[in-house]
Amino acid sequence: EFRPRPPPRVAPADSRTSGSEPSRLAMAAAALRAQLNALLANMFTTGMVDEQFQQLQSLQEDGGSASGFVAEVATLFIDDADRIIADIAALLDQPVVDFDKVDAHVHQLKGSSSSVGAQKVKLACMHFRQFYEAKSKEGCLMALALVRSEFCDVRNKFQTMMQLEQQIAACGPK
Amino acid sequence: MASSLKALLVEDIKVDSMVLSFMLRRFHCEVTLAKNGKEAVDMFLEGNKFDIVLCDKDMPIMTGPEAVIKIRAMGATDVKIVGVSADDNAMEAFMSAGADDFVPKPMRLEVLGPMIEEVINRKNN
Image (cartoon, rainbow over all chains, first blue to last red; front, side, top):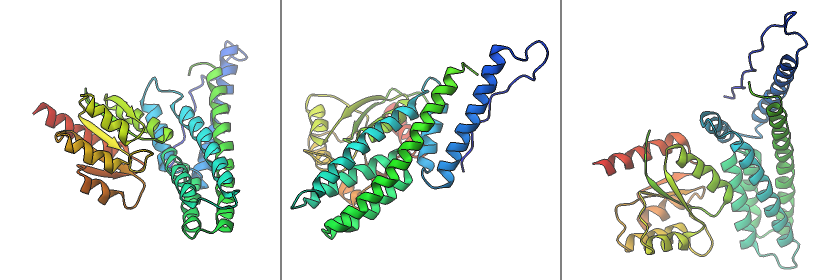
């Protein structure tokens, strides 16, 4: 079950502190954190990410000085998946398709999406298997379109997540 | 849990390698990386000693099970070797190659933790 991060405690405004820079930053951070929590909740409830992603978040939170770990993994996944999808497209563009290589690439993407918790990408890769096993170029092209679509969705969400985390960090420590 | 275990992680997928390394370091393991089975075998040939090996199955140049066979053939029978794979057929391949255990991907902390503890206890005894 997804547990959103609690917003930071913000001291109630009074005549001494209202309007001060620290309280404005704290309020901005709280608003950004609410946006981030809503984004993450959406990613879980739509099945875009699964408990493996939650485990990565827990690893980061429990790791003390490990802030940025999830962003690092997400960035690596995005770069890798981009390259793999391009490689698969190039293979399917050949007059004679090497389905064994397609298999190897899809297997790689399935592995990395599973490790990062990108559930929909993983499922799309599993769906892909029947087409390269059947050596169906047309089927593979349709399956690749699904993989690409799911990947674009999760990539956009990960990038928004990282932007929000950077903005929250820029507001200063809790 | 304090540990000074030497772990060899044999994994060609960078995302998997990063996540597993992080998990192992959470248990205070000293992590060495190999990108395929041949690099892992070479580590042992060079005289390196490890307490635990986490090994993927499908890798370029040499697969995980192939590496496990060669590592065991070198006489490295004490090191705990764990196959880690998303492949449905991986467990049989690893166990018949001589691995001690198999865990389907993705690895979970609650699975890795007891394995590390078991190796620590065995090492201390």
